[in-house]
Amino acid sequence: MDLKALQEALGYEFRDLSLLRRALTHPSCGSDNNQRLEFLGDAVLQLCMSDIVYAAHPDKEEGGMTFLRARMVREETLSAVAAKLNVGKNLRMDHGCEMGGGRHRPAVLADAMEAILAAVYLDGGFHEALRLVRTLWPKESEVALPPVTDNKTRLQEILQAKGLPAPEYFMIAEEGPPHQRVFTMAVSSQGKELGRGTGNSKKKAEQAAAGMVLEGEGKE
Image (tube, rainbow, N blue to C red):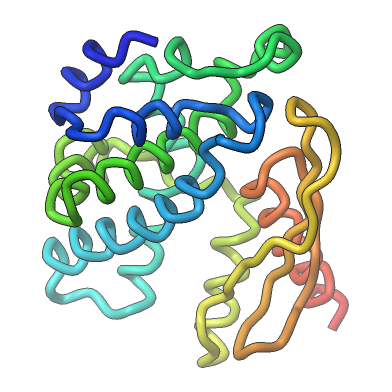
């Protein structure tokens, strides 16, 4: 790990370097890994990007702001930010995961980026995390629109058209060895579960869950 170079790239110097080390530790290395930080980082990123989109678009309604935020927090965007910072080369992972291309896998990089954001939040507070997102994330115009196959965006649009709350996703199960995880995610709205899906990352499992709901919509 070259923590000095990574901190320079982040533009943030940690007071507690153990937080950054944990953020860079893949689950294949044991229980003291970055999964808890990833969980927190996802929420921190949502709030930071909500703040940025809200301020930048005073005339947009909720649906439009939600769509913009979704573009900026997608796995593809997160992994691109992580690649720009050379996060992959600083990750701690076991030999099997590394040989399987773990240092370059978008899902692994995206998870680590969320964990790093959480580490900054815990070490320096929300305003440091917000500054980091404002500094490192690409501009909206530089982020591609979600592909037609983006089931999560399509499902969100359908629910909003019906006047229903945006979908929420939660994990049901996590199985398999650290370098070959299989996640099962469920999607719900108004507290009612709508469908489930599996994938080798939580975000892919979320897409699969949304796809299951969309298949049901198409049959109605």
